[in-house]
Image (cartoon, rainbow, N blue to C red; front, top):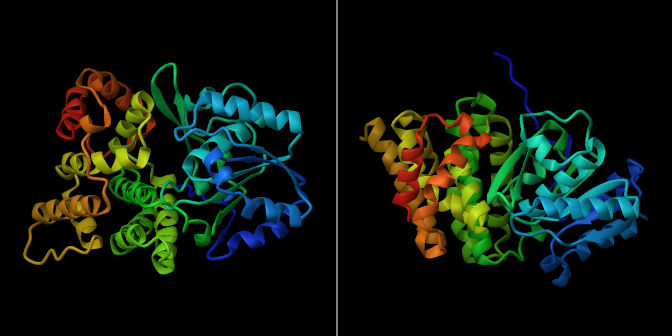
Length: 383
């Protein structure tokens, strides 16, 4: 069977990487940017690192700072209207996954027309490349700066859905760890556990390949070794650099091997309750992993070793469980081992979310198939 591997044609990575962006944009003759970000980053003057670079390159810009933590269809429509009014010829996102996903939606609809929901009804269904898109990343978790995924919230339908399309791959991704030192502890923890979830789900995916396996396992190793340090001391440049590479490797893995039930279930928690995506993944990952380990014990034994577990003397199932316990310990140590009920989740919504989770595209590559009742059962275990 043949495979296709997707990633951006260029990524600027490492300390000070953003200072190389202006020259790359100038070489591509891009002139007028729509910057897609959130108001918090603007108010903290963090976006200045980008606008200074654009200004030095002679590039004009308009800022759309209306992105919500779970970007909505309306966010995309509002940003698209601003892009058209300002006659921008490319889009730059600045921030984490929310900014990148919103920018992807704006850039895709700008050239293909219609509504962003139209592109969630299949995989790779758009006809035209999006507007040139640059993603400047400030978190180490979602990997949206380099994937074929965008997650959009339908507020009326109380659900989140993925858009999976090769035409939303960024033209240039920027991962500058100096832009990540301002992340607060909880955001560092939640995005780090998001990256771990990407790597784990990609490694056990039904369409994993040797390339995605290698990316996923290295990502797990780096996260296990560095996430706690990055949370404890945000100024630890070595830990920040390692997490930057970890989240990118995890993105390489899941952008091509896809994901599983953790993400399809987390999307529903975000759609109904507007909860932080990385936190939802952290809460769900151990129990979904136990469900999947009945089918993929050997893979979870590999994950245990990558988490730093000494599996000597353990059989495959014991090693798999030891790896899952290591994930739980890491989550507890960084503060993401929480309960859904404490976050406002209600029992009467579990079946609604379970049905939608099984209809989510991420469920297609989960290694073990579940019923609605089984998905409800997993939600219940983490209530």
